Every structure is written in structure tokens, then in C-alpha cells.
Length: 373
Image (tube, rainbow, N blue to C red):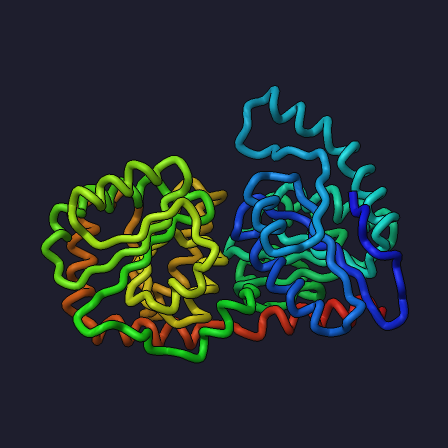
């Protein structure tokens, strides 16, 4: 629950609940909005509400954000019995959300995607509290598709060319990026060491086994690549295997399950090899870096491919389908970029032109308009 928070004080301050999460792709845009919301008034307060998954709890605790959990489970992509069980929890989750809202007294509720956003936004609608959604991807997720009719506003990262949302409600804002990453956006050229090539590998908040395995297979060929320095986020399960492979190959690398200081690694990177989650794409455009995308093929409605193509079509990135990825392909791509720094620089500049650093500000300004009626 939201216990421990100071009593509600309407003397200029506003309160917002940010609901949803499950992955960094949903959670980090919410944090970006929350950071800017708190700068608007010293009495403003934010409460994050989610299902209490380990990533959500760890990130919010580490950053000091107040958070609460509701008893809810995902429905899509599960067996029939687990779907029935998850549906049975929805009424309890809505009632629990109503209790949280009564205690915290938000002026607005923002859903950022993920199944835990649903009960909170429904409870806000039930209680006549202004509500909004943020959709990070080209193809909207199930939760946002179900909620789109009851909210007051929908913030989109990409143009709604398929007309999935009511144009009277929808605003194209871009995907909010956290302060610590936006602060690096003005520095277009990475501070490379003479002769060094800094490669950053990201698999999303949980890592990516296909990328990890391809990089391990590529290491024998890359061992002779002069100046190669790798920072590799593996996810928890693959960290020992990947670290051992780098040690045996002799390639200089920093290997971690998850990086809390990813902004600094973005800044040093000459090339980023990564998934194409919407938050990763937004962060790459914010800092202006060349990227080689390997979209996760099992993402809902293959939305990561759509995210990647937005940059590929603009000449800001390259994409390799996971089915075409192996050690030889990855090694060839990396070696090609090591030899062609001019192409990297062109891709980086084009990526920067696609960024929307004002996304969080646009959303916060509009949330204020909703709160003021």
C-alpha cells in the first residue's frame, strides 16, 4: 500500500499514479515522466503501481520511487487454466487499485502498458479521475487496446497510421527518455580512445539469449579485431557463460547481467547491438548512436521489427532478423563497422535527428491540462 507517504496537500501540488511495467520498456518511460512531473512543483508526488515483479521492485527501490503492488497476472500467451486464474484475479485487482487511489488521492492516472496498468486505469475511470495511456510501440499492446475507450488521452510514440486510436484523444509525443540519458543527447560524437572501438551489447532488461550465443560464437573471429572493447549486458542466466567466453577469447570486455549506469555506456559506444524495444530505440535516438538491431521475434505482434524499421528506413540503423543471426554474421557486421567509421558517424547523426527529447515535457504539460479540466 501507499503507507508512509505524507498526507495529501492540495496547496499547489499535484499527485499522479503511474501504473504498469513488467519490463524496462514500460517502466523507464514512466520514470522519465515522473522525473519531469516532480520538477513542476515542490509538492508534486508520484506513486508507481505494478505487479511487483523483481525488475520493477529493484529499479524503483534503487531510484527511491514510492511504489505499491496489486494482485494481478498477465493473460496473453498463457495456458487456458492460467488464463482463467488470471481473469479471476481482475476484480480483486480493481478493488485493490480503488483502495490505493482512495488513499493516495491522485489528480491523474497514467498507464504505461503492461497488464498491471489495466486494473488501476479501470479503477480511475470508475472513480471519475482523469486518466491517460502511453503507448511505446508501433503496434499497441493488449492492455492499451482494451483501455483506449475509457481514458481521456493517449500518448503515442509513433504516428497512428493504422487508425487504432480515436484521433480526438491521441497525441504523438514520442517516447519519454530519462534525464540521465537526455543529458548526453547534445554530445553527438562519442569520446573514443585512439584506435579503440567501443561496442555495447544490450538484450533488454532481461538479456537476450540469441544475441549472447551469437556473440560467443563470434568471439574467436573477433579476437584479432584490434582495439575492440565490449560492454555486454547478458541478463542473469547467461552472465557466467558469456563472461567465461570473453575470458577465453582474450577480447577485452565488461560483462554484467544488468547495468544501472547504462547512460554512460551509451555515451562511450561507437556501435550498439541490441533488441528493438521502444525504450531502447528512443534512448538511442536521444543520444545519437549507430545501432544494429536484432528484434525479438516473439514480441507481441512482432512490434520490435516495426520499431527497428523506423530507424532502418531513415538510414540510422541496420537490422538482422534473429533467424538470420549467427556468429559469422555478427562478426562480419562488427568488423565492417570497425573499418567504416564514416558510416557509423552518418548513422549516429541520423539517429539523433529522429529523437524526441521533448516527449516527457509534452506529456506532463498535457497531463496538467487534463487535471485542470
